[in-house]
Image (tube, rainbow, N blue to C red; front, side, top):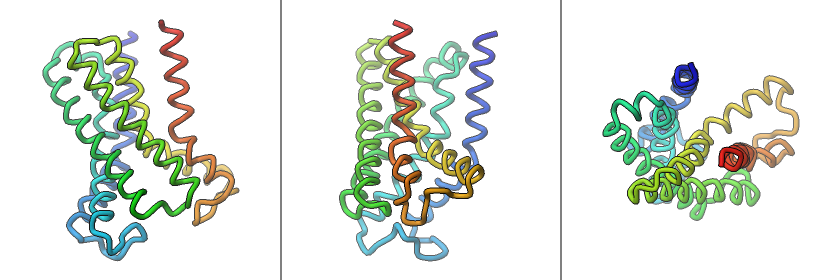
Length: 211
């Protein structure tokens, strides 16, 4: 029963993520083709910054949608080769997501200023680090360590989706209290870190209790 519930939960999570992922992939590839219907505030005259942010969005959407399937027990057990190769692709996309975001922040900064720059840069560094550690331990055959780092990467890969879910629930409950279009309100400042750090803390607590 436990594997069934785990699989069902992961599939449901993937289905909930699909609308966000499709939108982000479409937005990212449209930006790369310079085919957005109108200029967007994240665009500039800096070609490197534009390419970086649109690669970040497209690959970020891909890892968000695909990473739940990496934890499905039946796939890992019955089709290990599929698990390995899809994992490699997800890691490459994760590295591209992190590097693209970090390059964009370095060149242009974020709309929310220094606090958002710090929060999003920390997120990018952690995403990059967990991606590299996940593949490193897998290639070395250290599968206990691989599983631990993969779990960290899993929750970070969902970060962009969590960010939007948090805002959606907050606006539904409070009509946007302590939030503004400049992302400088109290809720906005908390959100710079709340979309990934609490989940990582939960993973660390789980891993230590399991050990």
